[in-house]
Length: 291
Image (tube, rainbow, N blue to C red; front, side, top):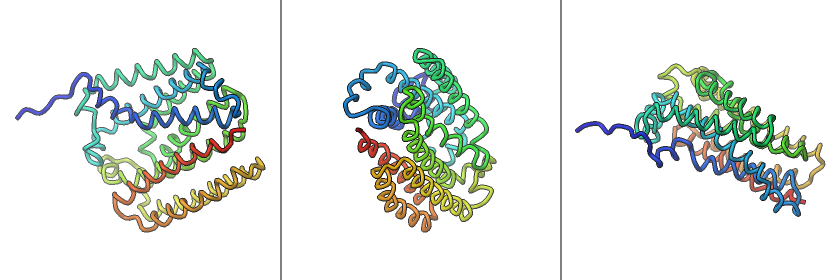
């Protein structure tokens, strides 16, 4: 039987390739940041009707989608080892179609950024460049690639405060929260993908140091970030934020317990999903800061 050839375009394949649910979360995060952290309770209608906020969100989503595409393009051989059921490149979509989609989305994201301001366009350009560097080289280095993705996650929040020039410090606290959870999740994903990374020579933390030492790094990062968030909440003198971080210790404790006992791919996949849930809880908590 002849092997099925990849199509020029597959809508389901494109949605899978661009991680459509993640793109929705990015857009919601930016709107929650604008409405609840930057704006006030009486301004939510103004925020929702601000077409420039919509343009920022669309441009961010397009850059992120292009980043997912180029990541899968470069990682197709590794993904056939780690997660063959999720592979789209050369399976559902041709390589040239994938690269064309990556270029179009990047140009569109940067171009839409120009409609808002030169500063937003520059941020989009630098984000697109960093995503390409990450997929092409940085992700194969220990820790550097993890930090790059975490920085981009935090930047998705900060770009809103940069545009509106309001409540920068409060948004920064949430950006650090997003950075922290993403960094930890990216390291866990490296443990989860250790088999394929080892085969293709990626020098991620678990590959060069082993799972045990990598876990120690995660424990250390979790402690440092938790202490930092409490410190920033005290600087803001915000009781609501302090309470949220205090309550967060409970699910974090469960996370640490599961990390201690984790030793299979399934265990680390659970922890990766758990980190995403923690991120979503942080987004939803923004609603308590509307004044």
